Length: 444
Image (tube, rainbow, N blue to C red):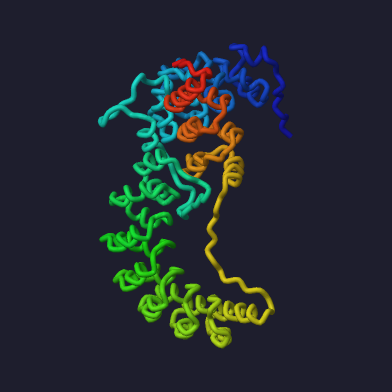
């Protein structure tokens, strides 16, 4: 049996530049000595890079770094992205290192390095000087899910909406414009072709605007109108005659579609349309009875699940040749007879209040990517100061920037962010400290 490595060691051995690299790598397993190993110039490169995340200041203080860069710039490029992001949160990253990491393969590291306070005195592009909101539009942002998310207690600040509505990602733009935003902004976005579909799907869009959008040339916009819960009955009635089957299917499933439109759609050639009618909670029993013999099993199953379906139809469907249909019909029939409860499947929409948002942020811990959902949660005006302080060490500068701008951020959090390595986080925190008479002096 192999002997376990003898670690122990002491501070003198960990700080001694003549300690063998192999021994330093071994001592790095000792958490107490790890910061000392991170600052030792004889520490092997693999060990040094591995210690950077937990010991960023000691890593930067290591005198071997510039020599490693001169020897082979590719060596420091091997650092793990989360470790590099941790280091780049510090303001005293040397210019040569932040500039080098502007060539890093990871997009988050590249973005953070490019915006580091020590890299350049001025940022500019072909279109002119770059400000925080311009930088945020280019920041790497992703959605955790393609499903729509809804924060009923969350009123997104207009500046956040305007900024992210021009984000480089179509998914991000559509998700933001689909959130709870002001009507004036919806009116503004309705005139922008690339945002019109998201406006049509926003539950805050007024019915008169939805009526106008129902005549849009883009079928995707019209379909979004047909799916919008606030679309007026007359608009739905007109859309029921659309040539596009996906639009008719959306109308068929809409809870506000009038019965005369459902009567038209019950004999539609497209099975998705008929399934929508069968699933609609407002479809009357006579129309459901018409669909009991539909050739598509999915239509018959939806009839069996509909609470408006007559008992005699359920008895017939309980003997359906398709097992899914017969099971659903039997369960519904038994529910009517009181034998066991029957619940019709319904889509569940998760609604989050500020307490749940705080809980989600806390549970998320350290994230590998910057997700739009978390970013928007940080705009919740009711998030308490302690929650903002807890999130302030985020590795992603857009999150820290929103925290620095949050009205509930306390003095201690702002003071910490005023020393941030990102130029925009740092600037807004310093401005807020200066405004409240705190320690907002600049140290750039």
